[in-house]
Amino acid sequence: TQLLEQSPQFLSIQEGENLTVYCNSSSVFSSLQWYRQEPGEGPVLLVTVVTGGEVKKLKRLTFQFGDARKDSSLHITAAQTGDTGLYLCAGWVSGTYKYIFGTGTRLKVLA
Amino acid sequence: DAGVIQSPRHEVTEMGQEVTLRCKPISGHNSLFWYRQTMMRGLELLIYFNNNVPIDDSGMPEDRFSAKMPNASFSTLKIQPSEPRDSAVYFCASSSGEDPRRDFGDGTRLSIL
Image (cartoon, rainbow over all chains, first blue to last red; front, top):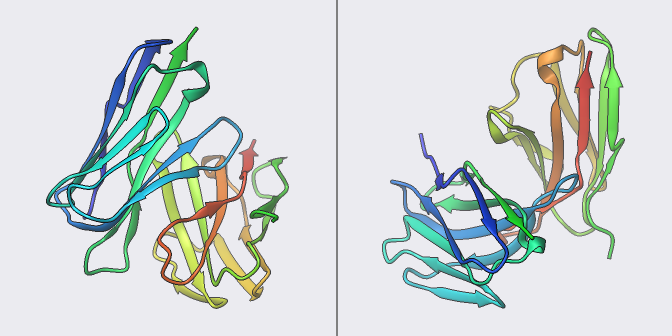
């Protein structure tokens, strides 16, 4: 069974702090996506990473794909209350047609 | 451009009743997915269609669940009879060709009493 484990499961921080969310698997992924989901809405794509070791930046968010394409991280600098939400990683398992979602990290940023 | 459109947004009904959830994918997308989300189990794939044909329904919990896609712009997920354990948020998503991303609707929050 392919699994994408995210950690931490829950995170509550003060505005202005930095944080990192991790997404780990024993499977290799041909690509990996990060989504953010706000209450009452569906997940919205933030970024896609494809190449092992790739780093992408989206304003205060930095995404990294592991060299072996089995893991990824999301780092948020100077968190804002608008960053509150559920963060999901997801990816295509290499060599299969399986697209799986991670277990999710629920982030709350306090003013 | 319109995104994925789901209806209804909320549904509250008594157990034993039939429930039908509806989805209109993004025009031009050829794959459609039905997901269920709960706190305990996260986001689970129920079924997906490619070019209106069901490809993988291994995630459908049991025979009470059925899904159809009569044309490229419409799909339904039906639960009959409904049970309290079916209470969850049901999402429809669509995608295009080789693009791995999923575009999600805003979901239907289903409560079975």
